[in-house]
Figure 1 (cartoon, rainbow, N blue to C red):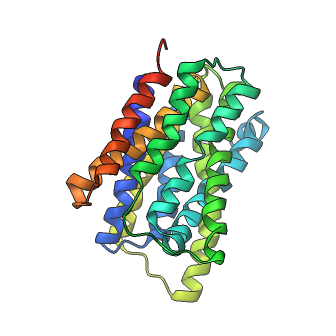
Figure 2: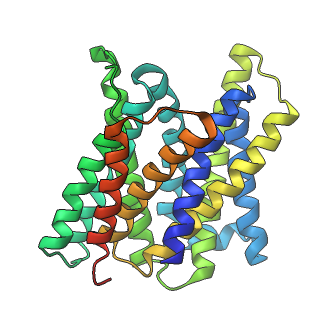
Length: 287
């Protein structure tokens, strides 16, 4: 259970970091590129090993390549969706991906289900809608609908890829956890270099020290988030872990937004947080 709590804290810290990036005018692309390099370095330094040949020959290598592309594309889509569809809709889209992990757990991993757990899943969806409800409705044109849908799909693919890698290739092997995560970050970094080069050519982006520092912080948090998720999935069922993690991140980030950034909470938002607590209790009943 402690890996789950640490994953929630790390993931929430990433969201807070992005809010601070905007406040301090951090170049997001620079920070993201440095973030993945830092994550890869932390991983390989931790295991005191970096052998490209052995990595490529690993049974999970192709999944780490997929994961690397998912990581960088996910950040880009999240940024575009936030600008086109708004933060609330983007957040809902990414967190609704919990449905993927529930279906995966039921069909592939034969996770246990009962009426109490199913009720908890229903409350997960209700709490997400309540937490992100805003009195002022955002009007979205047709061209802006596709990006949030892609955020939803990519988040689901991300969760699915992590679980498949953990269950079939690296279960119970902490060294492989680290190698997989570090390799995924390295792939994401290499892809981000191309994106950064393109932005620099078009906009003349300058690398600033504050953006590098921001990337180092983000990379550390991102690394911890992935590592805690992989470790937690080795202990808990996928259909239990991801719903609780998603609800935990949503609830904690909502509370952090209120106290740190003075974001207003409505009565329905507070009701959503209360509903989330009940959902977590039901899903983890008899765990």
